[in-house]
Amino acid sequence: MCAPDWLTLREGADSAARSSELVERLRSHLETTVPAGEEAIITDLGCGTGSMGRWLAGRLPGPQLWILRDRDPVLLARAAADMPSGAADGLPVRVRTRQGDFTDLRAAELAGTSLVTTSAVLDLLTSEEMDALAATCVEAGCPALLTLTVMGRVEFVPSDPLDAEFAAAFDAHQRRSEGRRRLLGPDAGRAAADAFAKRGATVATRPSPWRLGSGRAGGTELLEEWLRGWISAACEQEQGLERHAADYLRRRLDSCAAGELSVEVGHVDVLAIPSGRS
Figure 1 (cartoon, rainbow, N blue to C red):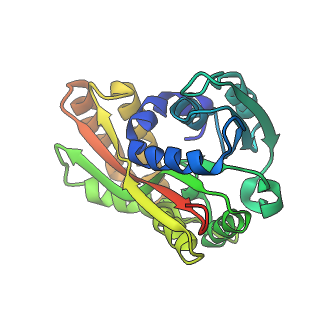
Figure 2 (figure 1 turned 30 degrees about the vertical axis):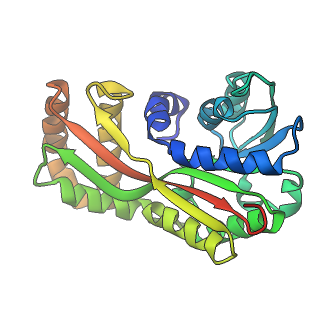
Figure 3 (figure 1 turned 180 degrees about the vertical axis):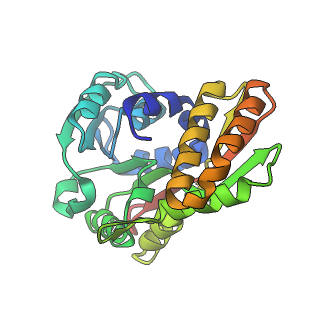
């Protein structure tokens, strides 16, 4: 579920979920490390359509240069076109794009960088890639704000007897192997915090749950689309669930249409500041 339309549909829920408390900590940090009047250089890894920049740039003061990185040139172009032009205090926000995979990022590429950000991408990394990202940021002395990493916790109201089976299969799907790569999935948040902490960084985590349903960001359209993708991934992992999937989805969609269904999808945000930079 990484198509541009899906990223656009989920943006409101993402914005509502991310931790404002960690942003306040980040603001305080940048005020002491970025000289007055100089640009904060922010590298957004796996930027997608740029939702992280649209959410964060206007919450940080001072001039900013955002370096957007993604493998998809179409997403990069869209992200660059839709970035805000002003920071929290109205000072300019500039944008550059860099196409490519960030798993081979090196500390030298982050020279002078004030902050690294990600949003909803860590679950697609392996433990080795997560460890390498932390090592790179710490070696460069660069703080990282890593948001919206899934935790493997989904709560439905009202519940259904099949919720737990589909949830377990979905989590297993997220931990799947792709060739020689085994994805972290819902273990990514803890892996990120541990990888930075063992290198001496100061790490803070905060919950950033999606709250989906009628009257929530994204409304029933987002909830319905999430349900379809969630059930499909679970069935891909555990084919025995396919015999239940159509009826289960129908029950859930009927409940959603009636405005009776709400879902909380657990995520975590991580702020890591290398030693000597706090």
